[in-house]
Length: 379
Image 1: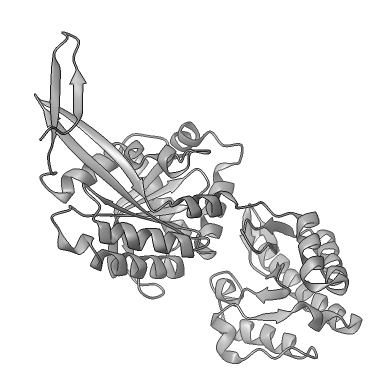
Image 2 (image 1 turned 90 degrees about the horizontal axis):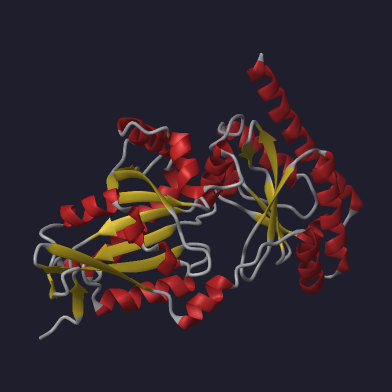
């Protein structure tokens, strides 16, 4: 049976290419390492094709803080938007490609977003470049050609990790039906994470090889949904909050945003499909430090889960101290168990002017602590 793949050579002869399995997973992994374009960025995103830098093969994944790593993902790539892309490679002959690999990938992803350290990711990228005689920053510039700076890009990678904005990519020489169905279902349900499968078929004929990639997981419904991601800003956030929560909540948010600007905080705006967000963040030397988030569904979300990874509030006593201060505001009652999570309160809890002033005063103290800490660090 003909494969349907032919190569017309310069001498006019026609060579039929026959599909052939890869000799081993390692062969396919080496190809991906050498030729990242095989990840087919234009198939993943037709409007804004993905470009790639490889961080490392066999990148370790810990299962707790300060762990050396319990597992390793076959490849870790980053795209031009700083989205970490976890790649797991299997041959179609491996029966685990049907279902088992999905649970494996989800476990990897859950622990990666919890325990990966951005400094380690950056260091591994830079070490790999230097081993190959390349300048890391120049390589990054040539590959992505972005307007933003090198350090700003790595801050974006860190933010994506903490928000769970990652891409999980299954790769095989043939993607079985069971995996296609699971990937399409997960990709439709997940936000902001993305789940895709990439089939790379190999065709061989007369000492030539042809590799043909194909992406699965992007149903028409999912493509419409994913392409509908919007960049939120102050006017759109206020408009949506007014629609969902009313004018009183709009006034509260306006006051908070005005305070944030006067406090010289960096405002990071989300790209949610259904719900918008704004994260006022303390900024020092191009690095961003978490405080809280405002959501269009009428909530303020405290970033304890992320604060525990940054100076001052990496000490649990400081986070408890902050929690206790917030709980002094009438209507706020955050449990001690939430100190490791991202608890939220309704915006209307701050409808009382006294409560709102107390809320902002608490964060004034947090900002002062950050400022004093980094001022001391500069000396």
